[in-house]
Image 1 (cartoon, one colour):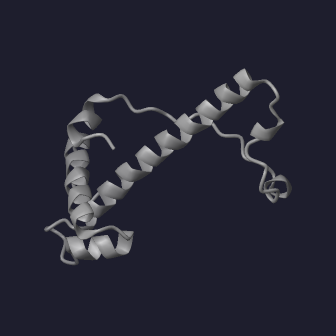
Image 2 (cartoon, helix red, strand yellow):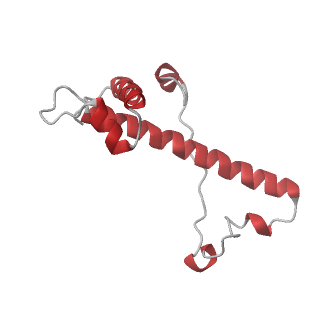
Image 3 (cartoon, one colour):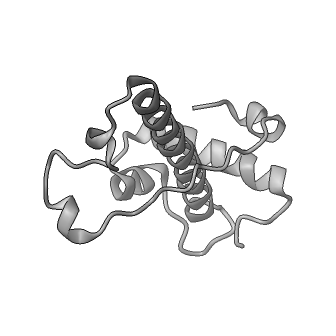
Length: 118
């Protein structure tokens, strides 16, 4: 994950639009975004790379939202403030990682110019 200082500078990547599959085709465990149907290795590499980048960007963005939520929950201004241990338990993190995510979230909140209570 990028450091908080890098987040402000780095341009946000938008995930590539994903084509969601009908329920009946997803029941097949070998079926994954029609990749198994691509015969051309170049086309397969391009589409698989596109999916990898989209999922990576989505995971990075989700982690940012986790950090913001952790910072909001641990905000000392809240009467129902959670400790780092409480945040860790809720998110299934270690307490040390929760502290880092709270700090990262505080940085994101400051960078966006909004209060932790928003």
